[in-house]
Image (cartoon, rainbow, N blue to C red):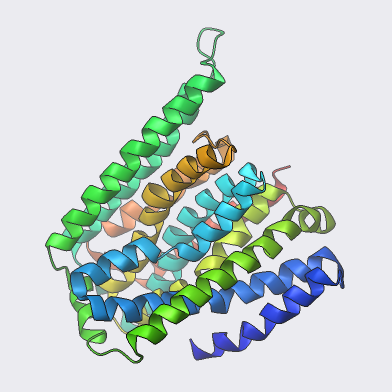
Length: 351
């Protein structure tokens, strides 16, 4: 993880390129995207350190709330810029990336190192049920907005439907947190054992948290400003950039942690990171973006396009199948990665 911090040099480079208009939009996009990686890692590390001082229960809540802070900031900036297509694609891409890329590499590399691995079947089943519910919640507004008998519901009704679904989603997420915090799963016990002592002062951790958040906001402005021209220069659609690139940028540090603990044969913790992050995006980040859109006067409905919905259903379906028996092996990880590559190819060819 430490080598990621070397990428902090990209923060001033991205700012100079953007402010001085040097190197073109592609250079700005690449450097600002690279700069987001260590900033997200610092944000995650600072959150974990603050969580140590607050105790395991509040700490778990902090991690759950701020776990996808970097991605939330990026999407809020994109939404404020009117890039609703990129925002929706990023939501879908983040969920897909967590259940296919993060879980896939965790299962694959963990299986190669340790053979068949086991995890808490009940916890995995609960997460799989919640993830299925989240995807169904995202499916319903799109299905009900389709024409029926030659008529379709009005745009105002679609917005109201999306707002209502968002309220229910965030409510069930709160209940999910309460349920999770009341018990101590094997994954939580692992986290508590590894985080018994803090490596920095509380004031330092809070300062890092605040500083990283401000830096991510600035870099997000630079990154989002370069999305449209970069997509045009590279011959890529905004859908592809939103689904395949932006989610990976904001979650690289978290992805590495999930893979590392899987290699250490702690599959409960790895599964909790991968699936938990996807759940947070679906049930917390998405509703927050809907409510933020109302405040920004940039309304965002929960009507995702056919390609995004098909990818979400496929990703969650195969991940549920893999988590049902409480065991995993390297071939299942390879299958998850293979589906992600297939979806990546499909999104590349979507106009």
